[in-house]
Length: 260
Image (cartoon, rainbow, N blue to C red):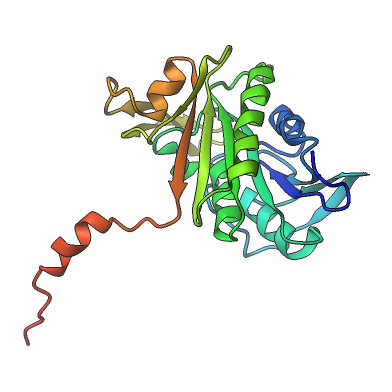
């Protein structure tokens, strides 16, 4: 696929941990495209978004060293893994960063909480074409074979066409058979959070976060939620710039004068 003397370098990470089945499936997805470095958390780090470790040292160890494959376990967040990899581990700037395959969809506002997408966005911030992959299932033995097949085709397109500056891809797969791929927008929705109140054996109170996702536009057909609910993989171009450009001119017309 590529000149063996000039292989692309691919950085692979996730938020479910270096031993997760999803990251092994992701490796199979990009295997053969180049030299692969896997740098992933030593344990699950779901919901860590763009968090970084600043108060304690970050420890890392190499757990596999083969031709075209190096694997490192990192005692840090997904973003820690990308930052450390780019600064201290990989021999040069990676050509691609891929994250996942996450157990659980990262559609709609979940992109803001996702450690999978946090790592993807970190790669994008470094100017590297980056993709995050998730599947709409929390089952430990979910079948990733369809995800690998369709994800490989999506990745091939990025290899061929690249991505615009400051744009990464948020890819979500439905559970089971996949009918095809839809390029779409992020659904409007939110998590309706609840806290389960419990008491420990010592009489102390604690709370366990629960809740459910509320889709604000369940009948819209052009969203990532609609795509995966109808059996399609969703591809959402996601940008770094969070400025609401359409509101700028209105805000400029506000009165900002401060009177003594």
